[in-house]
Amino acid sequence: MGSRPQPPNLQQEEVRLLHAALVEQEEDEEDEEGSEKSSSDSTSRAEPVTMPTFDVPYFRYIDDEGTEGEEEWSSSRSLSSIEEDSSNDSVVSDRYMVVSGTPEKILEHLLNDLTLDEDRGMTQGKESDTLLDDFLLTYPVFMSTSDLCQALKEALERKQKLLHLVSQWMSLCKDFLREDEHVKLFMKTLYRCVLDDLYEHPALERDVGELQKLYQLHPRVKIHAFPLFQSKALFHQLSLKENGLQSRATQRETKDVLCHVYITMDSYLSMRVQSGVVAQELVQAVAERMDVSQQELVLVGVTYPGGRLLLQPQDRVFSNSLRSVGRLHACRKDLGEVLNPLTDNSELQQRTAHMLSLNTWDVAVALTDFDWAIFDEVHEQELVYFTFNRNAGSNHTTALEFLLQRCNDIQLWVMTEVLLCPTLCKRVQLIKKFIKIAAHCKAQRNLNCFFAIIMGLNTAAVSRLSQTWEKVPGKFKRLFSELETVTDPSLNHKAYRDSFKKMKAPKIPFLPLLLKDITFIHEGNKTFHDNLVNFEKLHMIADTVRLIRQCQKDHMEKSSSEVRAYIDYLHIIDNQQTLFELSQRLEPRS
Image (cartoon, rainbow, N blue to C red; front, side, top):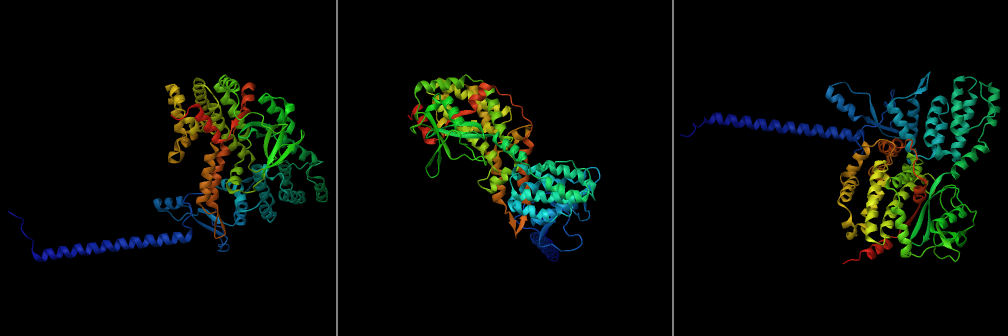
């Protein structure tokens, strides 16, 4: 039997109730959409839509007593505090997140946020410390050094706070500031003002001593609470002495640099030399490495477009900015090449035998020591100058450029050694050796050299040598496959990032990837919003470049002199067409 039908009036009542429920549900959804829309509208008014949504060091709202200065500063509540308030149903938090502002306002708040302490002189919170570090690392992006000096001069009435900020600035960026005339003038002005107040405020005596150390101001007499009338006379005795300038010049001349000297049109010697090297010393090094007479060689600087400069024996090769006079060529006196483009078979056999005689661990140690000599000179701010192309042509990115150049050199060196090896069995031994050297570099936490060797073995000219790779033992192939996984670029180089994060300092990161990260931050976010500095972007950049500081720890050199002598002078072919022709000659296409 079928179910009993309901009465008509009951059916109408159910339909009416169902319709009412649907209408109520639609109204609720419209209310929710309206509230979400109004919330998003208010959020978009409070902060730009394109701004990143993450916590950065924060300030209290800039004007606690009024609304003055709203045009110069834009801020919003921290997202984390909003989440805390919503979860705990607490009152609105006073925490704010720095979104954008004028450089002067950011600097003003940095000074305001410093608090006096009798013991230390200054104390800061963790957030303020990070913000100060962010500002000092990234200020070249939005203001020049002269503009910063001018802004600091306007805050001279707060001497003790200003001294602390300048101390941090000099400690962080002193290598970039030594030759800046605006900084010299500002430091002298600050020093004079502090000396003028020394009699009334003896507590500044320690700050004066710190200021002397920071910028190498050498007093002829010691400072002991001078009377006011003596302090001005004393200032004239305090200046940058010639011996101080000479000591800095000496430091520059003893600095190691990477030098390329071409011995053919498509191959060069990559050498580590001192920045004060003269032409005669370079010619002697090339002659010894190439086993030719020094008397037969001259050094020529090829300038662009195509000009030639014959360097005299005592001519300096590098300028004060550590730039060479041009592309350096070691030539015979008739301006012919030192070597034939393809040397004879006996020389190649001797070259391969020398490489195979070296211990792989010792080679990895020598490569790492070489890289550390350059990496120790890299400053975090170099990555900022490099990415934003600030002060092009200056020496602000020299060490970084040398390390990037070295990474490219090692990759080309691996290719050159393999492709200049004429016999199959020796090539197999070389590939096995380079795989072991790469593993040792990774064990020594030198990821820059590790990547270079793996990429050199993975280039088309080397990887196409199928007959050679077939002879490589299985355990070396498996080891190479494991090492390759670290260089896998998938998921934004997740394998490398996870592996590098687990390594303890000291360690050398893969610099091209670090620069790529900074470039993505730069290209994906505007530096200015309505003429205000986008400080969230700068915080992300500063947080990335601080990795350099975390990696740079004491590193003990321990390479043998024999291996180091070989690694310091690498013969490299940099012409990709020549390298591929060598590969084709070793294993022609079937």
